[in-house]
Each structure stands twice: as C-alpha cells, then as structure tokens.
Amino acid sequence: MKLWLVKRTDRDQIDFEEYKAVVVRAENANDAARIVCEERKLRGFRKDQSNATVERITVDGKRGVILAEFTGA
Image (cartoon, rainbow, N blue to C red; front, side):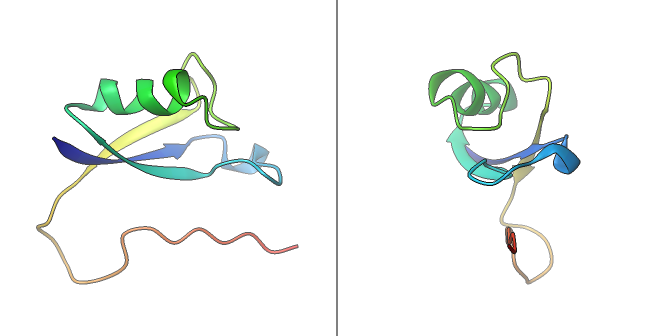
C-alpha cells in the first residue's frame, strides 16, 4: 500500500462543508481516486473524478508539513 494525496482541481468552487483534499492509503492512483470519489463519496468530489488530482506521498523529500487545509469564515 502507498499513501496518496487526492486534491480538488476546482478549488475556486469549494463551498463550506466540502472536502478540499484527502490523504488515502491505496495500491495505486486510480484506486485512491476511486476510494474518494466513488466508494466514500466525499462531499465536493465528483463521482466521475473530473475534479480530482492524485499525487503520491513518499517519505523522501524535504522536512515540512504534508497537508494543511484552512478555510476562514
């Protein structure tokens, strides 16, 4: 299993109570998108995956934050 970052591509359309991004454990990128968009049906992600992008998270890389999502009122 690998870790994947699934993010919305329509970030200017995100409303309150919708997901912006999700970290998922899956075998591959297609499976990660399927988990978020089809199986879990996370609010804001389209079932056809047209507003989702998937990026593999590895342990290699620079020290720092992997994901921080903040929405102010």
